[in-house]
Length: 71
Image 1 (tube, rainbow, N blue to C red):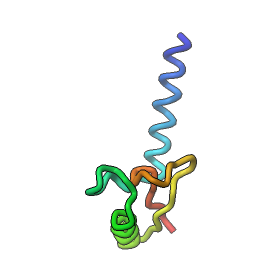
Image 2 (image 1 turned 30 degrees about the vertical axis):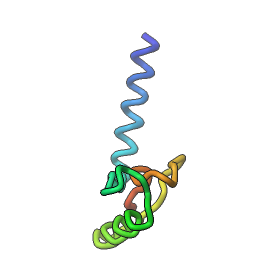
Image 3 (image 1 turned 90 degrees about the vertical axis):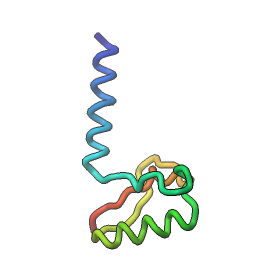
Image 4 (image 1 turned 120 degrees about the horizontal axis):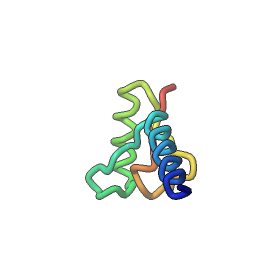
């Protein structure tokens, strides 16, 4: 029963994170946050009216740990 509760909690947390803002994706560098990948993600995000920001507890070297957040 405890395993089901933990699994459900993880699923809810994942859905909540997805609702807050989508990750910047994996880009062309295999998911690494290179200068060019971050620059391209910032431009794409700005074109949608947002700003690129590192997610809470995110690792700055991975592009998917950044999110485009609405201004």
